[in-house]
Length: 451
Image (cartoon, rainbow, N blue to C red; front, side, top):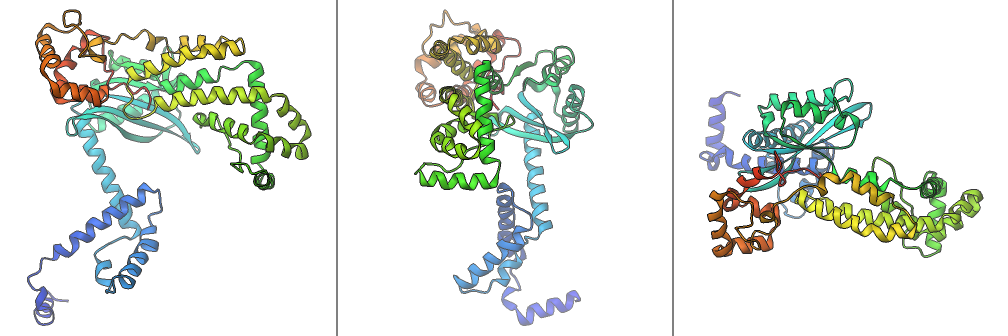
């Protein structure tokens, strides 16, 4: 239609909308479209859910509850599959741009994890840095890229290098890198960590604390390892077959059990080890009763290793409690060190119970770097030390005295905030300059020990 005819129609038929801003009606619908698209991707739903479910629901709500015409409202909320996809891509791109812009001017640590996804290898990266806009330390997901060809150390390094160069992030901004214990990551000669150190000599390379903790938990004696295999066979026998799983659920209900299903455990999801053993302990009576009719040999094996099963469940529950304390965005390397040293001291009773020394010795070997790490007293207890004995730069001593003697706000902040939050406060950032007195490249606030 010609513009002149459209204008004439507007003036004659809808004079009340003649001077109305078109953007007013569209602005609310546009915001709703982005908000709904964000919720769709948060719930990992299909792009088509917008036009297939959300639109009909909105239409029904407006017409049934509000008793109004829904057509005018729905026209302002575009939710086709392509539109939802485009909205999500735009929001993801915007978040990435904001993150990259901060990394370009901030020191940060990075956590890398290489994993198999179908027939391909994927490299995932997380970063921890001090956000100038939020005035705090934040953890963010950086990228997930497919590795071309293999998953060797050179390929991993080139993937990270390409991403940082593409987004103009200086390699020198990396203060620490955390990886698992795979040879491609921590190989003595050509591992990823060594390749990174060739580019950034002062970078701190650490082995993920949670992964090291898992390796210690795997250090079982032959007898305990055999018992663990029997437990896995029993679970797979019941849980791995639909018929057995259904009959077992009926038996559990008959026995008034709290649960009616066992839990699977795989090496990939190693953090769930304690859960599946504890569930087997809770349903031990029903499990033995069920296996007596299904597999008599396996039933007898499970009976023989009952003591080992209960011991392993108790032991793994202790490991699981420690692992949960090591997780979270606010866990610093200092807190991880405190938790692990405290846990190692608790292993004594377990060692004497089965006359075993493996766990404690393995802890000592795997966490030697954390135990030998020196943390200045003025960082942990800034208000309880004498300035003369503190290893603080002379230029900072005056500010330190002022803080511990007269800064009531700082004392209140220290009481109610974590160490990272306290030292990230803009008024306390001057003291972070003294970090150069400790280990080279020290960035304990940023070290991604427990991503």
